Length: 386
Image (tube, rainbow, N blue to C red; front, side, top):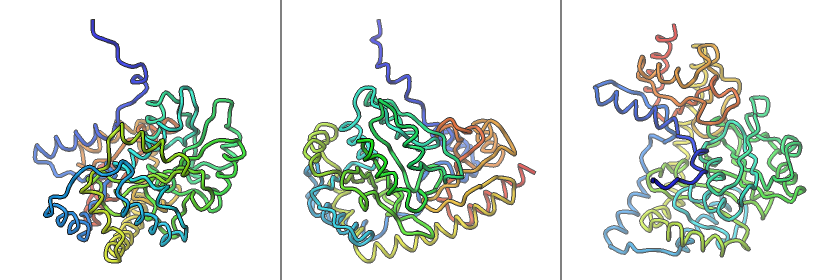
């Protein structure tokens, strides 16, 4: 007899965007030209100062395990980043360098989520977030959100939903898949609401820095008890380096260190030493120039999609995603995404990846490709939909 796998696996859903990506690669293998808007990965290369730092370390050959918490110099540099970006003094001792933002969330859930503990998340939201909660035997409870609230939580919504089993809340601002941020002042109200219930707050700030029209905000400005997840992948275009960080209350750092030691030993030494260069003036200048380019792409893409029948009820103000209402064309976003890929060679993600609330009437498109490809993609879609 084949041993039974863990029951939790029945609630871990496939990542449908990867199915689209696989289909897209198969078309490319047949000679088709595909425009990739399905995966949230910047098209910009890693900044040259980071490459130079990595090559220097490679030449030295000094690539060994590091502390599970990350190298001290990088923890101090991240602390300086919070001082530069937010005017906050975050002790390096509270900063844990991780093997990507996903590892930061994994550590947080392993520390905080027990069997049947309920964590509130928005619907739509990034699917891996709810799956991390479930892997730890917790209960991810999603609450439907719409454009009136910028597809984000409000403190009043959390207060109404809080129940006997609720342990905490996971917010993401800017959000994947919607590219939207919490309304101004709402993060502070959410912090206060969660504290009043004696709960915990996890703030996913992976896309912080890629903000348009307003400065980035962090939960650390309002609480020393929040757990803040961030990453080098998006603002600094270091997706394949698999490097992120977690800021936690200092009293929990030792337990998080033990978890990291056992789960993955340490983040990659090469990635950590290379990432030190992210905090140079040259790398900041590169990142800011790219942020401006992303904003120009957003301005074009959201408007162009609206002209050909997609509904964009709220302009994204962060990241590089548009969460588009396709109810004018379909009530099955999965089938729509597959058909459009076959007909036009434009790949994008169906809404069913991100929740259940009107998911089959939405798609997520990433404007992480250059302007010429965006224009070509819009033209192809316009022709097919006409």
